[in-house]
Image: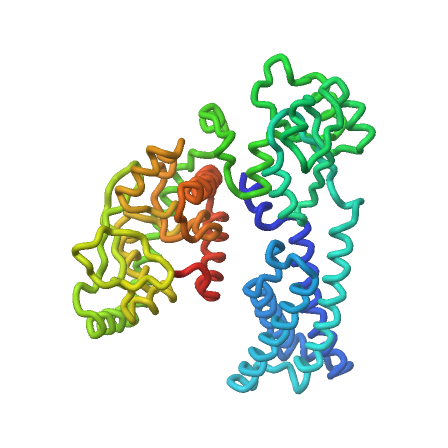
Length: 460
């Protein structure tokens, strides 16, 4: 299970790209050291901590690439954008190296090593990216995939198109003639009786079964023979989950929730998460104490009391708790509570800055320390809004089987929801998290949240 959701974030092709660029970063500065010091380079690298300094710069370079979206395939949807962001990465890395050299002269690996290494790095990374893009588009490296069954495949086709790094190519579908009216993205290849012939002709290596009613209709023996010959057979719900990182609500069945793996985090995991959350929250409250004191003073001087915003939210098992935040809006007794909007007139001067920087969320560390929340989990909503959504969206109560979180898998994909459809999609991400809950997934969410905070995306 862990490898599956990690593969959503880090497909094999992305891992190859990352490892290649780690090798290039290391190699560029090692080569620059050899060019600068010649036969003395071995001494510089091994006895003057040169290799450790270069390793640190490699980590710094990879962080620059990550924070500037070089591994976000959906954002890097053209070569021009990719190369533009690569130039930005090299510029930021040059600036950071310059600042480090000024503040810590002993950090430099001799004179001009990093200056020499940067042009080498630029040439090699540009060349590597071109090679990777060409290989990624190669027909030999895609996995021909067949849809088996009836239904509208358009949403699935669109999702697969967004993730070219996964290496899937939807060739067509096997289904009835009536199904052809619903599908414009895929061509009909034949009916159920022709499956084996189609597999051989088209070179299919994966079959995604979309049939809802399979009794007496699914060619079980044929599929078993194909599986024995190395063709992968997969249910559409699992395939969709792997491609999108969310659960398909439109085809969700009670039996799937009941019998699928997941939706039952181990007691040991829950206890470990609770202990780590409490210790981390206590430490962060101690570290951020002086900053929170400044925020308290600034809020009081700007708009007076109250300093804290309190609101009832729905937590684990539907339990109501009080959530704490720094107040960022004016108190309007005559107005019903409603979510914040962009450029909301209710924002105070300090509050607008708090919202942009997300510092208004700091008091939630107290909620985490108390056990009302965890660092990662489904985001809790207002009581009225939460129960209203539970009445309209099937399986919504499943969000309440774990502690709500200050951040979550849904938050890093859908920061704000304004419509019922938005909340349905957010629930599909929450269910994916609950189904695949693990330490690794929590770390992924926290790391992505840090990126969002640094780049100040999605705040209101």
